[in-house]
Image (cartoon, rainbow, N blue to C red; front, side, top):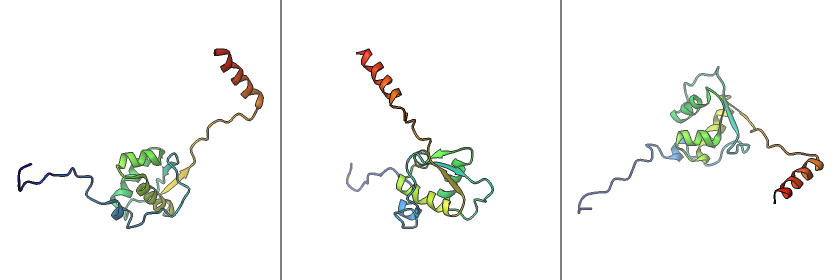
Length: 122
């Protein structure tokens, strides 16, 4: 680097995350996790939404996406995306669904058969 020249930092976005969330660090709802599915309401207009919320809605309109997927597409931290999602839930723009729970066999017999099968492989 020569004297008087500056090294340019790569732009990480024009708007800081605290501006996107209007200075809020916590969402109004604590029910969101990384695998919560987001479904956009089709009948509500996008007018009046900031660019990040509008983009979030556009991402979710074709089908359900998880919180983690939306954060990746928007290139924003998950904590920021959760604040945006909570705002959109409050306004009725987004509906959430829990991810499909993993299968948990309740029958001890099935678990024993699986264990016996694994032991037979050794």
